[in-house]
Image (cartoon, rainbow, N blue to C red):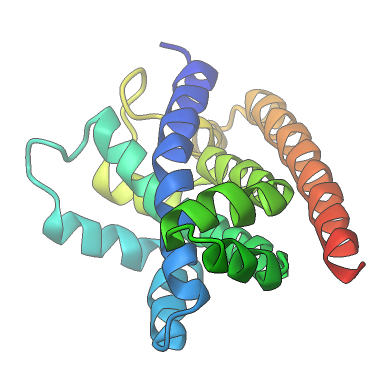
Length: 205
């Protein structure tokens, strides 16, 4: 499989894993008394060095998973989780809690009220989080190289391929890969920013 193909496949799988998990954690944090603790733990990979996260994963993952495509997915998922969580939490916070409370008074369970009222109001912010998580997965390097190595055709993603090309002195190839990543990242950032701004304007009305 090509470097771009493997990277996109890994990014899609990791994002599909992260999006619902981060949204659930953000929902649990929404009205929890221990919100600060939940937020701190969920955001931890965002502030830790990626190599530190990779080392911790190295200690907990099965040897059968290490240095495989599955290890790449796990590393990307862990590193992109905080971005999805922060976006999901902001989106849920910006939704008007009064609609949730009205649904509860009309007999809806907390789960039903959240899924049918709060989530539809927060969908733009959630989509922005998905885009950011996907983009983060494409660019993940530090944790990946520790738990999955840099095996061409097996675990080598775009970020690792760029590192490889630079080390080998193939600057022109590295530049092409960098340009692809920059274009993808700029597109994702602009799209997520537009969605977040729209979410904020809606919440301020």
